[in-house]
Length: 173
Image (cartoon, rainbow, N blue to C red; front, side):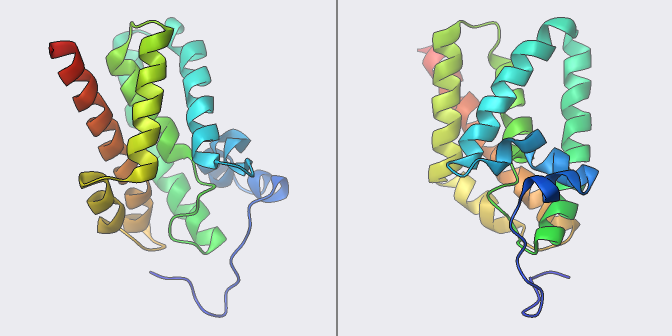
């Protein structure tokens, strides 16, 4: 199934939906995607907090492994959740923000609160405004299948890359 069926209703996320399947719980960012206002920002804030809690307990290799595992588990979870919601890229799915912002934080740390705020602001800009390559990535993979699940995460990874590119250029100058 590549696009929503005209007969299938679009499912709105709720706490009941969140808890009805492990993929929903993951894809909706452990509930942060249920925010009625700016779920992507809520998911990114959750990612930031979770990173600050988990990262001090992991080696660089373990953090890299967590990112890789989170990508593949998230790909599956986003695919299943989008299919169950009958929407190709629902705003409530925020695992893409989580994985992408973890990547940003992993690569910019150690940095102080100001550096983290700059990373957060840049990432949210690239994710929400979708300039240039982020817009291309957002349109490149669509559907209610594994390709679409990959696409949900891919555009956020491109936003993370753009964020890291700006930070690297800023540090270079």
